[in-house]
Length: 338
Image (tube, rainbow, N blue to C red):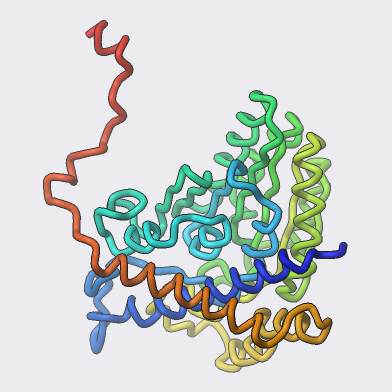
């Protein structure tokens, strides 16, 4: 599949933006949490799951999506949100717990919702798959060609919600793509210790749907596989399953001692960094210049710095705001009936 240069440049800038965003969060999250780790301290309290290293999945898939396509993401959602075009300022403010956040600071980093680009995420394993199937059903019933994509981790493919949702999606031929990010570990459990299935792409045949495994955290191969799956869904030919081998450079959560993996694993993975590989590809093929890449990198860094500054300078919600937005106001006819 020939990839347009502008699309390649978008994927590079998006991957760089994700990396800078996550690496910035590493230091911001640590504020107030040293020398003794206190999960409730600092400007960003609570758990934090970062996706440095997993950029190819988000960029390679979301490059095919439109604002009216739905994306659901798991507890590690920043890369998906950035690639889907979620408002970076309001997303960061939400993570900081500020009133300018996507959820007015009440959701935090595992509960990011942006209806403007149809993005949502949650902390319940595999719960995003039925949500995406529901969005796909809605698009089909409305006669639209919008699609839905559910991102999950490889451990979530062992959960019941994954299988129940795929069964229904296949039966009703819904426009949904389930993308499995295989980063080797479900929290600290290696993939081979949690399932007898070597590749989750093998599970596609159980539901009679196409499935593919993408090796080596390759954004170009991901783009190609996702393009076929999204196009198939948009044509009304039903769901697909895409599993992508990717790598998590950081712990499952910030503060994770990572005693479950060899000390040399991450340095070896960084030697084959996907952003550097895409950079080399663009230059070797003569598609861009060093100056072009510098401009993309500068723009990505500026966007991230602006978002963090906006979040820091935003106000915290009023205490009484905790009792607001709990229920959707009843429709006028219901109010009259009361």
